[in-house]
Amino acid sequence: MISLINKKTIGSFFPRKQEPTSSSFQRRRESISVLLLLFFCLSISAKDNNISYKQDGPYRIVTDKHLINDIPLKNKGGYQMVVEIPTGTRQKWEV
Image (cartoon, rainbow, N blue to C red; front, top):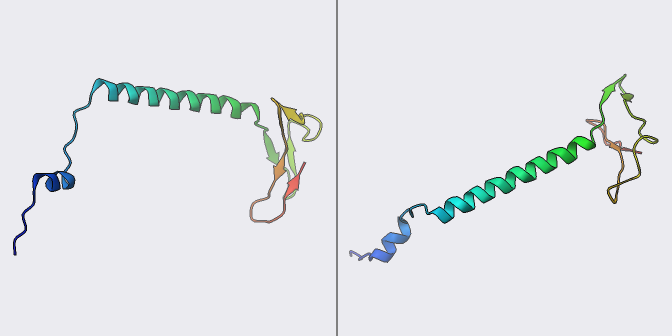
């Protein structure tokens, strides 16, 4: 038994590619610019909170800032905290 396939069914299996329009280019350009702006803002905000440290023995780290006195409790309306979870353990140190 042979079944007949109409043009609508074939079109659903093999959709035609639409020609790009100026509005699709505009939307793509806007999306890329929004993503770049978001990435730029997040990279600037992440830079403010960096604390450089080095390990001085298996259970000690040395930082350029005092983790209790030099980090403000509130920053831009939100509370801050320092959490240290050593790799490979379940211990958690909160300051």
